[in-house]
Amino acid sequence: MKPFTLLTPATVEEAVALFGQHKETARYMAGGTDVIVKVKEGWMGPDYLINLKKIPGLNDLHKNEATGELSIGALVTHAMLEQSLLIRNAYPIIYDAVSNIGSLQVRNMGTIGGNLINAVPSADGAIPLIALDGTALLVGPDGERSVMVKDLFVKPYETVLTPGEILTRITIPAQVPRTGSAYIKFGRRAAMELPLIGIGVLLVVDEDLSTCTRARICLGVAGPTPLRAVKAEQMLEGQPVTSDLLTGAGKLAAEESQVRDSVRGQAWHRKEMIRVQVRRMGLRCLDIINQKARQA
Image (cartoon, rainbow, N blue to C red; front, side, top):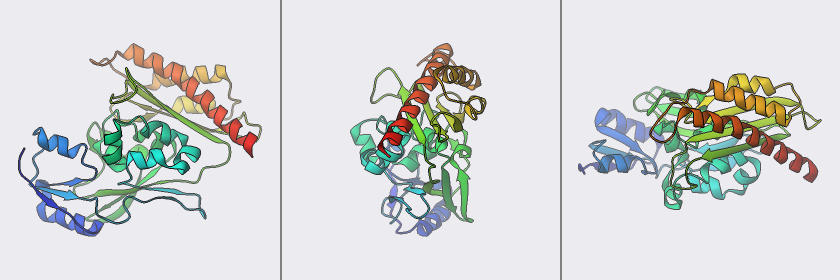
C-alpha cells in the first residue's frame, strides 16, 4: 500500500481548504470502507487522505418537528439508520435498504454519504432517498448548493460533485399523511451480497385509503445510475390502487428499466424481478398505510 498522510480537519471549510491546497493528490474519506480498500489494492494512490469523521454535525440525524423535515448528516452510518426508531417507524424504506447493506462491521463504519458518492449502480442507500425526494447539500470552494438526490449521479462511479466539494447532509421533506414505503434487495443471499436488483416503492393515498395521489418507483442495478420508473408512477397516480394495477405498473417499470446481461444475472431475469417486486412492494405500502390508519 502506498504511504499517505492523514489530515483531520475540524470544519467543512478547513477540509475544503486542505483539498484546495493539495488538489488531485488528496481524497476525502468518510467511513473508509471503500476508500481504504481502494488504497490497499492500488486502485487509488493519494498522498493525502482528508478524514471527515471529526467534523461536528456531519453525523447528526434528526427530524425538525416544526417543519417535519428529516436531516441526515452525510457521516451518519448505516447502523445508525438501522437502529433508529424514527427511521424504522416513519421511513421504513430507508430501514429496509440499510439493514441489508454489507455486514454488521460494514454498517457500523460505512456512511450514507459515502454510499451515495461512491455512485455504484448497486448502492442500496440511494434508492430510498430518491423515492423520498431527498435533497443533497454540497459544500465546496464556490460555496453551497443543493441537488436532488435523483440528479446526483452521472454514470457509474461519477457524480455531479466538482473537485473539492463535500456532501454534508441529505434533507427529506415532510411526509404527508397516508404514506407507505418499502424496499427490497433481491440477491442470491441476504447479506454480504450486491443486489441483482433493488426496488423501492412509495405510495401516498387519499382519505379513501385507496386512490393514489403520489407514486415513486425507484430501481437500482437497472441502469448505469439509479432511476425512477416515471411512466409506471404516472400509471398509478390518480387511480385506486389494486393488485391488478400494481401488476401493470410492475410490467411498465420493467420496460422502463435499462437492465443488461452480466456475469451476475441476465437482463430477462432482472426484468421479471422488477415486474413481480413492484407489485409486492406496492402491496406492502398499502399494508403500512392501513396499519397506521387503524392505529390513529
